[in-house]
Image 1: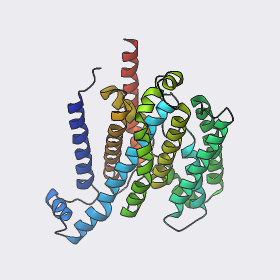
Image 2: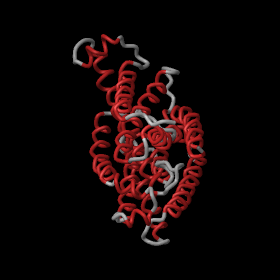
Image 3: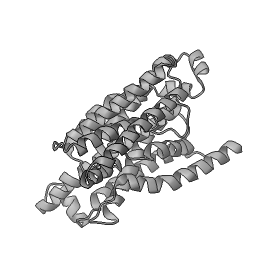
Image 4: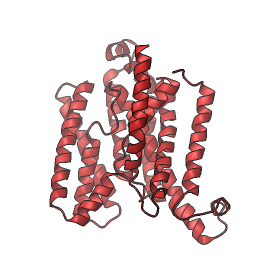
Length: 333
């Protein structure tokens, strides 16, 4: 498959972003005509329409763009770090740790709206530290294979604890926990958006700064070392930054799969492997994909809302199968 020229690719990404935002602000269980939406955006017209647009739909769009973007960037970085094309942001046990923290808070009946995100973030950080310590047993170089194995162990342990907690909790608590685990943007608000943006900015800056080093690391550790890359420092920076991004995304929206796996592969096929261009493109494409998936999740069966993680899985599985087929065809040609 021929790669798309840079200008056309940028225009395509811009069109995808505009389409996602337009769909997110226009569609919803409460029908609003385009004229009403535009008037509400300007702060005029029906107060209820203004409230729907500014208090419900726009924060949800902004959170979707951020969560999808950071998951895609995290997935792209981790795929290079562990040299595994099937790596995604949850490979290193972070989703298990975050899920355990959230389930503990939900089943304990903590009423604070910040309790579940804070518990999920704390659980993800604990999982990150555990994976790092387990990987450090094999040496300070953070071998990708050891990281994956450590992540599988930590994730399996956390998953077992979650299953045990859900088995002994009441039906309402178990349902609430399961809905959170399937991911969603229903809790979006401008405060959540601002908190995620402030938190994610430094970690995103670290990964973008390491983009050239990631290009060299993809050639192998020895070639990267000979070309002047501090391999150990780069791997530590990427691991910590990508893990923190994933922890923040999970704390904000629950566990949303396939965005961090499918989007980086699609960008590589369309535009190449240069991480200096891939990471920003993955952020835009991942955010746009999640906003479109969320728009479908809240409108297809309205007023019933599907967990957005279900929609991304339904989209992600066939798309990844297609990408894998094309990638295999390119590799064999």
